[in-house]
Image (tube, rainbow, N blue to C red):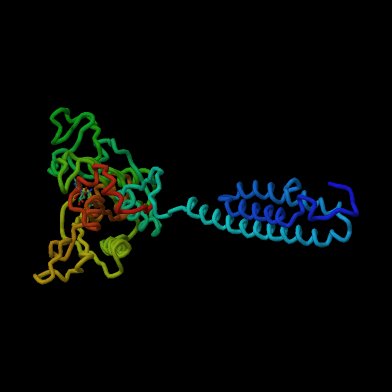
Length: 380
Ligand code: FA5
């Protein structure tokens, strides 16, 4: 910076010539306009408004001018610097807006895109169906009971009044794990105690009666095995759910009321059941239980205009077996039949899943293809 000089004329000072100041201003404006991003603008800002910029240096020259020249020179430089600062601020706003718009586009998240994480699994519909049924009874105060899948032949058959030569032993074709006695027992001498893969959940009844003092109210969900071929309506490994109630004064009316409550809880308030005579060695009397078809509510019967695929227009769907516990079973399991009576029922979960969800082929349930399980959703 030059020292004050009375004869100093701004027009004579190179840096303060109006055309020089204009050039500095225009160069600054051009640099700001040319800056394509905030970093370049920052560089232009330092170059044209910083302490070492031409306009700052020119401003310093003013201090060396004689007083009469300072005002004009100050005005000239001040206007130029004002224009430069204004242009800088405007360009700053523009570039920030451009950057924000670009960031919004670049960092936008498309929430509709499928994510690439491993999809969450869901429990098999057979499991959720079994728990749904068990929950109906748990909410009535029943206890869940379990038993082994590899079961003593005594529990699976003998305790349940299947006599060694009883034709019912042939009714349920059995996987024998060890030995076999009675009518099926080609290998056994008759004295052996065989071991089987349980053919139904009914042996849990016998175990529960031996384990507990009456009253007994239990529900037993579980896997069972029969030597059936895998086809559209059978599988060698399937699931049943069994109910047993032992108390003083229980009758068929209690059984019927319990069945009605179950179907109303699972299928709707206007559902009901009916019983048809049947035979099971462990219940007497025994019945086959049907429930009203929950799709047509019986209206398809004799009505060709309104056929029902779910019940084949029969109006009823067969659900399982039931009856009053045979006094011989009570005695075998240490319960006094003079004092106590009881009812039991059991049915297949696969069959229930078939008609409840219109599954046409039971094989779909065992093949493990997620395209089958996925439509059942994430119910847990
Ligand atoms: C029984 O197993 C009796 N324990 C049920 C019972 C319990 C009666 C308590 C009385 C008192 P059943 O053999 O009918 O009954 O079989 C019951 C259900 O198992 C059938 O209604 C059917 O839904 C299912 N089921 C039988 N075999 C198969 C199979 N191979 N695949 C899938 N489900 C089957």
